[in-house]
Image 1: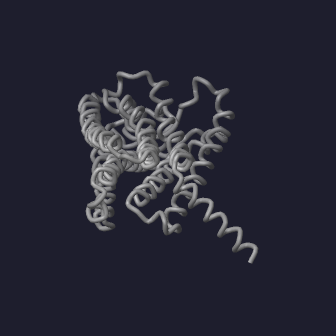
Image 2: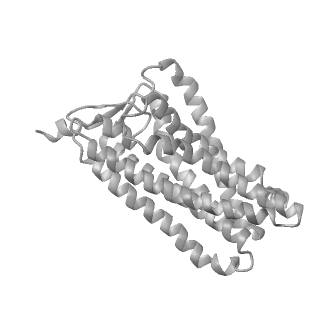
Image 3: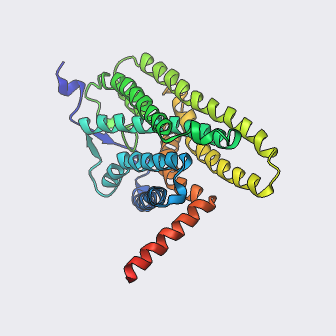
Length: 313
């Protein structure tokens, strides 16, 4: 059997084939959200790096999260905008596989990083006297590097198993971009091993960090209620609730999509949830962290004042 029969040169993304009238409105909505994702996350990175009052482990990990969100959305959204902006709905097979590798690398990295951020909050609230020693810059870099390496290892495993599936000339992918559950459904052979592997590994990689988050915040809640100062309790609550909201937005769709065999969920619902955590969540993260965080809002004001003063000079 020829390679062209097994693996077509181009794939056709048919995400909106059932509702073509949604193409133009969705193009502008996607462009709007992507623009705000870029602006919001770049702003978080700039203030975290340039403001001396934000040189702490919390903002180191927040910078990592913003950089991840920038890469995460850029992996998929430009291709979606290209396909929505014209009649061409194709993506090359090689481009599709590269997109799948990157998407799952970055998505898994963010999953692990959110668990590490919960651990950081636990150390800050429950171990304040030892916090600066335990979460020193070297350990922060090691924890961040671990998240990236775990994400890469997962992507290499899952995506490589999927790439080996023959498509037998099947060119239509019922999705907006190349994601593993959709690619597995295209295969013309038995995909039980791929589906079970995806569900098992995803369960481990989601429930591991999620368990860390639940344990950390259970300890944090007990510690916060023992803080005598109402202002300090409110500050701790605001910081932790922002992270919990981000966790909910990211983990909720991921649990539904990946912790079950790929054929068990309606494809339209899967596509909607995938769009939510790869488009809406990265856009919302900067606003969640800035609107509920006085330190970040203060740093943004100082950065804007310096920019305005430098232009006047």
